[in-house]
Amino acid sequence: MENLILWRHAEAEVQSKSGADFDRALTKSGHKDAVKIAKWLNQHLPKNTEVYCSPAIRCLQTAAALQALCSIHVEVADFLSVDSTPEIIASKVSNDDSSRTILIIGHQPNLGTLITKLLGMNESACAVKKGAVWWLRQRVNEGVMQNYLYAVKHPNL
Image (cartoon, rainbow, N blue to C red):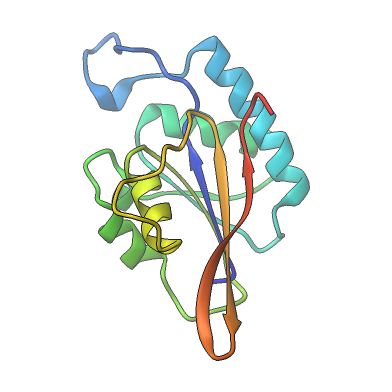
């Protein structure tokens, strides 16, 4: 892939009415932050972007902010659920097609751990703040595939 964009869901309520983590919804502030990032993404995403989203309510609501701005298809993907692992996520999004752009909407610590591994950082996961986007790119340099950080965007920046 050429671009891998990782978007952590925006701020969610501490506990859902059902008590299930899966059902936690975005707060008012979370909705506002999701819209801010969605506007930025709408301006910068390549047209062929594939979007995959965790089935958790807070992730679906984050994705809905982008869908409200553009007619982008969002595929709900169980491999991005709260119970997933960075290894599972990496296996689902890695490929040799250098023209693909993939946006995934998911959870910490999986996103931070995946970023850490892709960028060859030390073993501790980096912190992806709520609502933030990390945009990674791949390039071939002297015959070696490299991942590098292209952009980081947070709702408050």
